[in-house]
Length: 152
Image: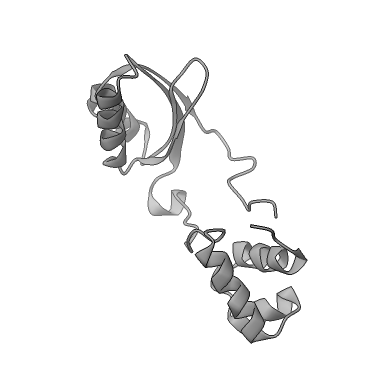
């Protein structure tokens, strides 16, 4: 989908505040409310705007420990991979999971209340998931640049 300067202003404003009223969004985009609303609807229908969400502070919710975990599987047999994906989807500790190229097969972003909770997840859940051969964990000391806006 081709985006013009107005679409980009709308997207930047919505990334800063997804609850922005249409009137304020239109003002930020340099439009009147009705054409602005039509553009937002078009961006939603095209899938450019995938969803609206709130950004939560994990530490204030009792999840201050974050880890990035690399996972290698024993094999890439389709059934095994599907079972692994299903097991991952059922774990609330896994915030995000990425299939990767390179030495390891997956990169997981995991959150936990403390090291003991992480160890419980790693030893009793992750290492017992179908096909897991090896894991390597790195713990976040400080988020220098947390996930942010998509550059538009």
